[in-house]
Length: 347
Image 1 (spheres, rainbow, N blue to C red):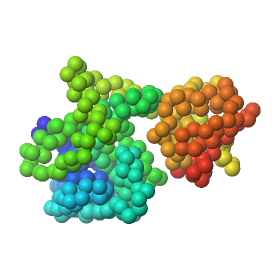
Image 2: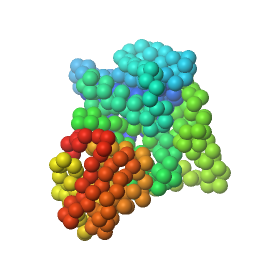
Image 3: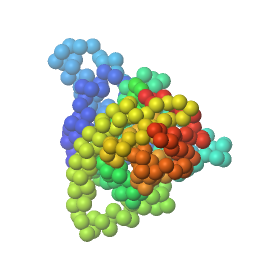
C-alpha cells in the first residue's frame, strides 16, 4: 500500500467533507497506528482545503485537528520518549498538542487493560468537549478488529460483541468517536510510514502476553493463520454481516427502552413476556452503558439470566457483577447499583 492508497482508504471510510469544517481530536500514543492516522488526517485536510480554495475560492475552514497524548506513566523513560515524539510531530505538522500524564501517587490506580482504556477515552472526551471538537479519532486497524472478535468470543459475548469494533459511536452528547482505519492492516500502515520517512515508537509492553489481547495477537492468531491463511479476511467479512444485524437490533432496543423502562428510586423495567431475547438483551446492554455500570464481567450467561427475569420466567432476587441488585415483582424488575447513582437514560 502506498500513501495515496492509504489516504483513499481513510477518505472512503470517513469522507473528508464531513470533518474538515469541525474540530477533530486525534488520540496519538506515538505508536505506528496512531502516528499514521494523525499524518493521514492532516494530509487529507490540507488537500481538501487547497481544493476548496482553488475551486471555490472559499476562505480557510474554521475546523482544526489536535493531537492528544495520554502518558500512562507506566514505562518510565520510554513513556516520556513516546510523549516527546508526539509533541515533535504535532509541532512539525503545525497543530496543537494536548498532553496529560497519569498521576501515580494514588496506590489504588489500576493498570489492567480496561482501566487504562477507560482513562484514555475519558482524557480524549474531556479535551474534545473543552476544545469544542465534534470528533475523537483513534487508530484501530483491521487487526484490532479481528483480535476484538476473538476476545469477545472467548468471553462468551453474544452476536453484538461478535460484530467487532464499531466504526463510530457516541462519546457523550456532542462528541463522536470515529475509527477510520478498520479496513487497513497494521503491516500496511508501517509500510506507508516507512515510505514517507516517518518514525514511530514501539511499546514493548505490547509484547507482554500477560495481557489477554496481546496473548491473542502473539500466541493464538499466528497458530490460526498457519492452518487458515485467509482467516483474518474471512472474519472481517463475517463482522460486516454482524454489524448490519447489530444496527437493526439496536434500533429495536432503543425503542424498547423508551417503552418499558422508567426511573424511580431504582431503574424499573416492565416485565415483558413477548419480546425476543436479542432485543431485550441489547436494550439492557445499552442501559448498562448509560448508567456507567461495569460491562467487563457481564457474560452472556448473566444477560440471559436477566432476560429470563424480565420475561417473567424467574422471580428470584440476586446480584449481578458490579454489585447490581435485581429484585422482581409481578409487573416490574427493579435494578439498583450499590456503587453508582442512577443517571438519566439519555446520557
